[in-house]
Length: 116
Image 1 (cartoon, rainbow, N blue to C red):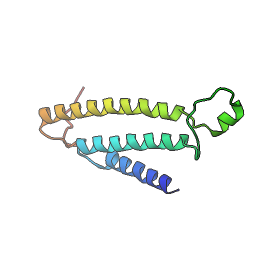
Image 2: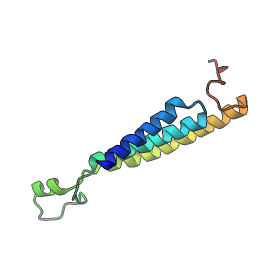
Image 3: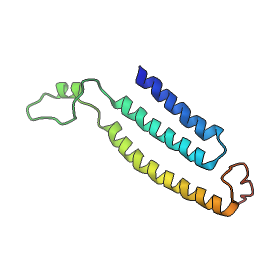
Image 4: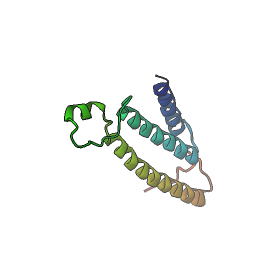
């Protein structure tokens, strides 16, 4: 129960940083925190108390194996999500650097001269 409360607080901090802050760097940090919170959520969904690795030994019955093994899909999704999140974070940092070079500010409301 405590882990779920911490996860909800982690999600709330990420949403707050993403929605309430005007600085681009703070928005990037908020999105990164939110990304890690979603990864933690996926891991917590796939967790099974007393579970074992999903490696089936020869001669083991199928029903007993399924009942005690941990689902590996959320773990694989989180590994993929970590790599994608790192790439997105690096892209956002590069864009923040270009915004700083062109407009001399990182305030999102000040940069309203961007027109397509």
